[in-house]
Length: 487
Image (tube, rainbow, N blue to C red):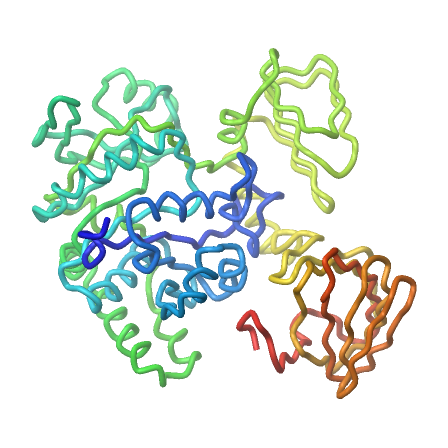
């Protein structure tokens, strides 16, 4: 790895809307934060995978402002860099998501400024790869192809006729590595998600591969291609990146410039038009984990093909996913059904309709139904809070603060808060006074009072918070100090 440190960079695309795995994922908690498939989240697994290819300081995450704090606190990766006093250039923020072409182009502008001869390994943050060793070897093999100026993508060898993925048709064989027999082809054509009949034909022909969304290329080559095929995008991002580097442009002006970008994928914008795209067939146990049907394929199942969570009681169910860990789910005679139960929403659909979950998500968003945005329990850098009751004029929350963590020093203009300690010991700051509260003790925080809640103990601190006021939304927080960079 040492010889690659100066020119090899990893780019992880960590945007996402949280729509495909709703209700477990939400707009403010996309699926890359979920750990359905093991002890690590999809994002943590992707970062660990990338760290086996490039040094930590050469890994770039492209994300957005609304997920910034969660990503920084979700990844030990950033804590290690901060302890080493590394300059944190690992996060690139898009003002708003505009699909993969702008995200990749923005990362390319950044990397080209660091090293014009750099090579980019681009990965989504939320995919599953079971055969890590084979994947890592394919990436290393692809570097010698990318160095020649090709744009390299990886095509997953299909084992069934999937209608939820895009496809790549193999063209001319241009390289074969012996003795492994690893082949590389020119990419003949790219195809959108097919009908079932067409997917059947693709599988039978043996010439089509699933589009994985993983790429390797020289930074200057992808920038050259974007300048040719997406000239307007290139011009906007050239201006945008130069303004970022000056660090003096108002945020509103940056957002205005970025909003001019027309959303487009890198596949449609560049790869479908370029004549030097190659595809490397891969059999690596890959999934985009892009629907509940895909989750059902991956999870362990009983003899009747069911995934049954710990709170489920079922009789005569077949080939179904029954997920929920908060309350009892009783199911009788279900077949090919998805049930996902969370504390504030329930999804029920046929497995073959699970791709339409994103349509439900968009419907809620358009109609102002708040459950698309976040769940009743919300993760924060210091712990989490859960909404227990919400009514005009008041809210009741349960707040859990992890050991050695604290909320920001803050105030509210429109609401008061009343805290009752139910477990642990709370350190409370009110204006210039600091004191401790034990179990069953309480404190009242009037509007305008500067305050902070902290846990200096070794156990979790649990608080019941009652808010009162005419305006109770989360944006009524004026942060004065914050160890998580939110002030």
